[in-house]
Length: 551
Image 1: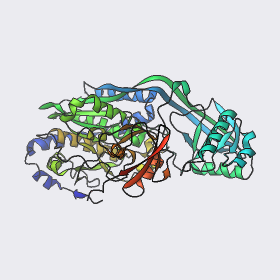
Image 2: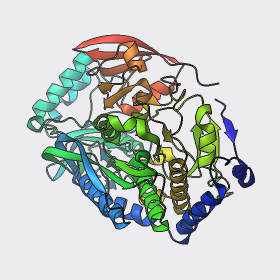
Image 3: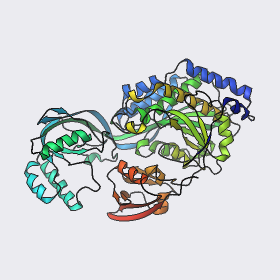
Image 4: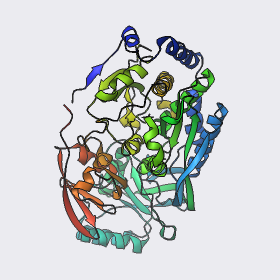
C-alpha cells in the first residue's frame, strides 16, 4: 500500500518549528548529538547482554539476571529511580544448557539442530538406532519391534495435520510404551526456528525430546534409512526445568520532567528472547539502543519538560505479557502518556515514524532535529490513517488508547534470517546502525517530551486487522503457541466469536502445526479468513474479515 512520505530538509525543518523556540531547542539537540557522537557504549551494552548473560527466555535465570543488570546499568548512568517491577510469574522455569548431536553410523557426522523451549532434554548422552517413522499400518508392523529406545525420524518437514488422528494416537501410544529416545523432525529450510509452549505442569513435565533438525542434515538421515542402512544417532541435550513460581519483571528508569513530571514519553524494547541463539536482533538491539539513549541524555544533562521513561519489558515473546500487565496495573497513567516508542525490528537503523494527520505537525516539530542527521541513513515521517498494533509491546499501549509507535527501519541486515533462528547472534548487529538508532531514539524522545501538549489521539487507532501480514496479534488475540490465552475487547477475533481457551487448528483449510505455520497462513490469501478452532473437544469455524488496507 502506498504511504505518503515526508522527507524534510534541515532548512525546512526549522520553518516547521514556530511553536517551539528554535534558539532554545537547537543547543539542546546539538548537545545530544555531540554527546552521542563523541563516544558510544551501545555495542558494550549489547555485548554484555547477549554474550555475557546470553539468551533470556521468559522464566529463565538468564532473564532474571538480565533485568537486574539492566536496572544496575540505568542506575550507573545516574538515574536514581531505576527499578524492576514484578508483573507476574510462571509456575515452571526453563534453563537451556549446551546441546550436541551427531550421526555415528553409517558415518560420523555432526548434526545441526535445536529443541523448542520448555521441552525435554536427554538424561546425558543417548546413543541409539534411528527408525524411520511409519506412515501406515503396514510400515508400523514392520518396525514396531525396533521402537524400544530408538530415535524416531519423521520422513520430512512437519506436514499439515501429519498422520490421520487415529493412526497418530496409535503411534503416540506405541512410542510411550516403547520408551523411545525421542523424535527427530526436519525444518523447512536451513533456519531452525525456536518457539515453545510455556504452560507446563511441574507434576507432568515433558520427558521425551523432540529435535528440530536442519533440513539438509535430516535428509541425509532419511535417505540412509530408506537405503536400508543401519543409522545410529547420538544426542546430548541439556534442558532443565525449575520449580516455580518464577517471578517476572519489567525494568523501568525515569528522567523526571521539569514542567509536566506526571506526563510521560516511553522509550523501550523487550528484554526477553527465545533461547535458540543469543537473542541479539530480537531484541538485544532494541534493549541496547534504549540503554544508550538513556546514557546519552543523562550525560548531556538534558532536563525534559515531561518525564522520559525507559522500559524493558519481558514476556513479549509469549504474547506481550509484560507490557500488557503494566498497562493493566497502571490504567491511571494511560491518559498521561504522550507516546510509546518501541525498537523491536532488529539492527537496521531507525528510518522513520508514522503519524496521523492530527498529530503530524507535532511529530514534525519533535523530529525536526532528526531530519538530515546522516544522509546515508535518512529519516522520513509518513502520514497514516491510524496507528497499528502489529507484534510488539507498543500494541499493549495502543489497546489502552495510548499513541504507540513501532519505528520504521531500513538497512542491509536481513531480519528474517535472524528472527527466532540459530543465527540471532552478536555478529549480526551492525555497530553504525546501532549508534545512529540510539541517537534517533534520544532526540525523538526529547522532542516529544518538550512539546507544549500531549500528542493528539484524534482518529488514532487504525481499523483492527489492517491486512493479514501481522499474523496472530492483528487478530486481536494473545497466544501460548496455538492456544488463545486472551482476546482483545473489540478486536477482530472477539467480533468473529473466538474465545480465550480456543486452540487454533486451521486457517483457510491449512492445518496449523506451530506459530510459524499460523503466521504463513495469515499472510496468504485475501482479507477474509476461515479460522477453525478446537473448543471443549469440538471443532468450530469462524470467519474473520480484515478491512482493506489503507489507501
